[in-house]
Image (cartoon, rainbow, N blue to C red; front, side, top):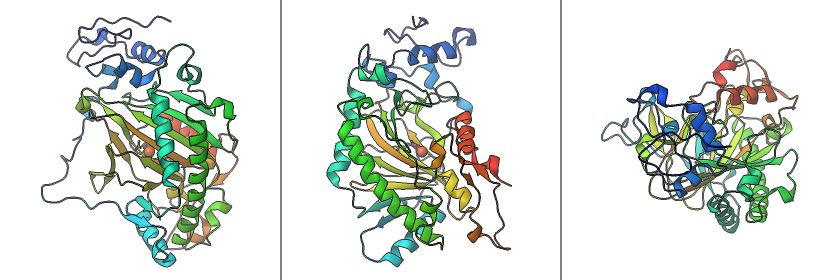
Length: 386
Ligand SMILES: O=C(O)CCC(=O)C(=O)O
Ligand SMILES: [Fe+2]
């Protein structure tokens, strides 16, 4: 396939993508062709940056009408937002931990955990493996070219934006996707340079997930096994993200605002920063905390908790300092589109004062709906609201 050559005086790469601003003739800009040109390099945004791009191509530009203050512009002077809570799971006071989880999940939808029991080595090796995968060359015969796909059935794949053709703005990000459960991938499908590290990581994070589901069950006033009994802990996907340095970070976005679709996400980020959550009408930084995981509630947990817990919108800013690496681990039966599990607000939580706020949904239908929208403001859940 020959990428379209759209004349541009800023960039001289095999992928000559338009960097023209919105003033130029719309006829000169064939968005689909440019998305396709990027897609068929099989090397993602990292390939674009490695080729020396100095301007953000137009497919990545956040449209003016969507342009929100990127940094802390929405924060009134002198009113620094509170930081998201940090909970030490190993503090030895179970009642206090449950209470802290209840408060954080209800008010913030996000919290950090320390004392979580996942070895530091496992965390560091997984991050190094993800970095190594993304920083390896693409091109013919490479792991990247072999794995490049957006095919839903594939358990191991690499791509530049899962929603490249659906979303209004391409994100300055590439992703290695790993579906670990319900069916573990063939070890041979994983690239050599990250196989062991990511298998080990997934295994450790799975057991942290089980601990968190017990705490969250108790935080809802249910027996500890409740959320696992209804299979919220089944299904596990790792998204291993790489955000290359961006030459014009104010024009692009690393990850568009969205809420997560599943039950629970356990996120590990490096020291670069850029993750923000939308809280009380402003964007609040989720600053890196070495050794900690970030935990957040997904849409389906908001639904079954009948708004007891909140699934909160978040985004990642593009940065020009250095590449950023993160690993997002999602739990949920929704990962299996053939799942016949039906979810609705948990009966034990309902009463005359707490009537159901959502209609029931088939887990697989929920995620199909979520994917049909692509990353965007929080709209998937509202579709199910009564
Ligand atoms: O990279 C991050 O820190 C966040 C990624 C994210 O929000 C996601 O994968 O859902
Ligand atoms: Fe997310």
